[in-house]
Length: 283
Image (tube, rainbow, N blue to C red; front, side):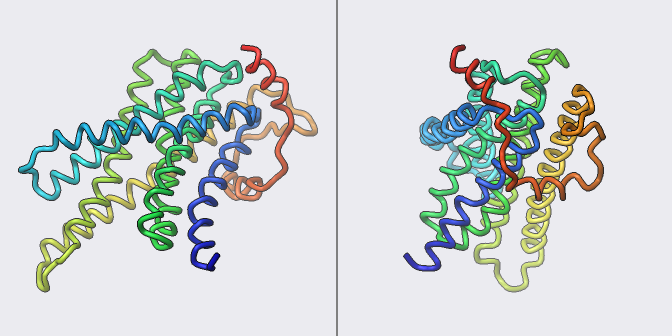
């Protein structure tokens, strides 16, 4: 196996593993691993109905769409809407029905886990066609984008469970995830389409490409920052409900929390979730 092949595999697997670990260790009350694995696998399997939906919806695509209108159709109708709907189905149909889903942080953790399952298989399919360059680029863009959208989706779903809002909260979360996901894909597809064969001296099209690239980056950064803030908020809530002890922090998360998280990513996992796992098996 050559060096390039090894690097390609690492760029495909490592980002998903690191992000899974990040959400896992940020949860003060760690979730049962078996449930996280099942949620991940259900997210992965969600790619199958998405492909079927895409085949049906592709046949309905109007033939007269312009390049940007076509990118808009592909980004929202073929990608964002069906993908986020299937992730939501995993959260509502499986994760939220478990005994261990008992606090707001769980929505973020299970939502991100389902999204990363989907992202893993989707990423592998893209990398199989594009190789190392595609793997490296998607490892720091598309994979974190999927995780962020899933975490946001799960956050709003959890608000319904814990009486912070009506069922409208689920639709708010779906709208937020679809909007961010769709804008991200639209900007990427539009910029790539317009950039192909730009003739010399075409400042108007060059300006459009740069604008779409700016939108693409802004959407990615907004999604990641929003997710980090949601994680911090949920973590503060966890600590506010737990009495201070030598092993339980009672402070609020400070500005250095993200740095702390990066150090914790490879920390040894807690075994405190075993009892809850047994309850889930019995449920």
